[in-house]
Image 1 (spheres, rainbow, N blue to C red):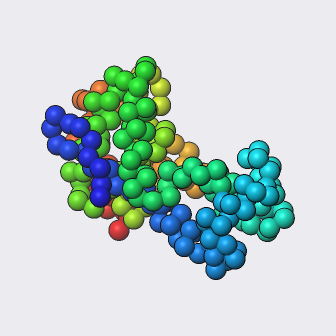
Image 2: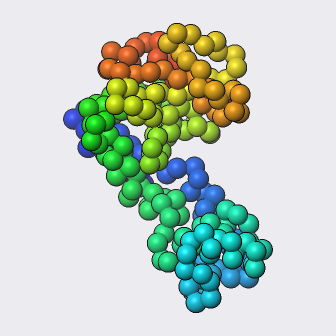
Length: 212
C-alpha cells in the first residue's frame, strides 16, 4: 500500500518506484536463467567470491557470465542487505526517509515548496504516482513526467517532460534533455510558493497528458 506522509493539509501518498517491477521480475527469473535462486546465489557468493564489491562484480561477470545489472545487484545483495527497490514494502519504508533527508540541513526551508509541488501533482490526476529517490522526486504516469530536484540552497528545479514541441522561455528553461535523449526536457526554477501558479500547473498538466 502507498505510504502517506505527515501533513497539515492533504495527505501526500508515495507509490512504488517503477524500477521495482524490474527487480521483482529479475528475482523471479534467476533460477531459470542462472541455475540458482537469489538465496542460493547469496550463499555461493559469500563462500566463494571476493569480499570487495567491485571485485565481486567482475568475478560474477567474468567467471559466471552474469550480466552487468544482475552482477551489480547480486554483489550487493549477497551480504544480506536488500536493495531499496527489491520489494514495494522495502521501497515504501525508505521513501519518506529519502524525502526527509533531501530537505534537511541548508535545504530544510524548501520542504513546504516540495510538499506543495507533490500535492499539486496529486491534484492533476488520481493515477499520477510520486516515487521519491535519494536526490530527486519523480512524478510518474506510464513514464516519468516531472521531477522535483532541490538544486541549490536557493531553488528547486521542477523538471518537466514536455518534448520538442514546447518552446523554451526565460522561465521554462532547457535542461539539455533533448540533446541527451532524457525524458526531462524543460525545467522551472522554483524559489517560493508563489511560483506554483497557473502557468506551472498548465505545464505539469501538459506533461501528464503527453504520457498517455
